[in-house]
Length: 85
Image 1: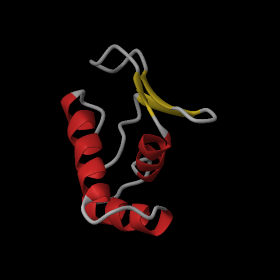
Image 2: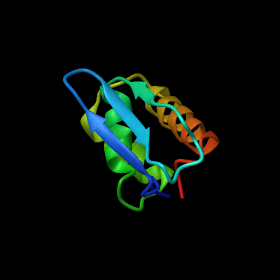
Image 3: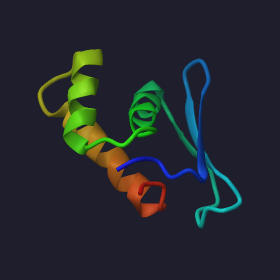
């Protein structure tokens, strides 16, 4: 899976954004924190859920299950808006 080419990711100091281009069916802006930005960065290249979780575990120290929950929530929301291929 990966972010579709008709979505543009942008990170600012503490916020991350995913913005659709005119070719996307979704109209709106996805706004989140650095964790969202890190997950989106990983999804810019073809990857799997397990690879995203492994990369996030290397980057962040979090309680058991927290990273999996965050990754699953982000993937689910991105699928709902049609941002993943």
